Image (cartoon, rainbow, N blue to C red; front, side):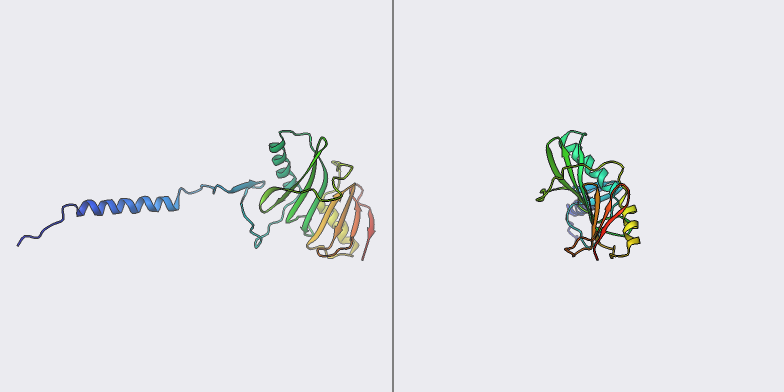
Length: 195
């Protein structure tokens, strides 16, 4: 008795093999391809969109300012902006923060931009801002200010809030409604401490 063969069996098997190969390539994709929601930030880091609070990174003021100014210039098409307000949240003793907030003037218009794990975003301007004066270029760095604050010994400096406005840095402990330390932003002179 002759065995009947299915004449299309070899074609069916070859088709399945090809389908599986194409399917695997579509799932894995080419290596080195960035996701569409990736945001490059200074230092070669790529931040994916979304809130990944379980792994908070810290940034220097320079890293944040560079990213914010680039974003602002791209949005506004201008490069003659000035900064009137800087706030670092969850600042560590080295002066790095998990989140930086900038108040920026362009002519008579002000805006607030945030830099954190999510990249650059816009924030509503809170009551009491914008400040009347802009931040001069010769202010001390947050790293220097945190060293001065550390020498005062009156605050736990891990996770503090650092605000630069009107020529002064104000440092407060997270969760504390009281003003902590006020330091002259140019001279580094300790203005007040509140224990």
